Length: 67
Image 1 (cartoon, rainbow, N blue to C red):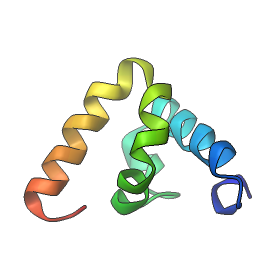
Image 2 (cartoon, rainbow, N blue to C red):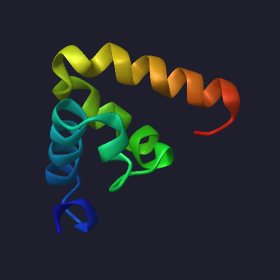
Image 3 (cartoon, one colour):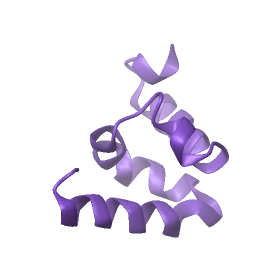
């Protein structure tokens, strides 16, 4: 599975695609907030229109102490 693989760039591309295309609730079946935070520098560029939503969500999680 790509999300569990060792290829960091391939993993980042897949996470970016997942966050861009899936509903947020569906994304959490595969990723945790900490997974997203850890990969953020590599995935941010691939999020397109969804970038601001995910940036806001990460900021909110950080404010609440979730990620």
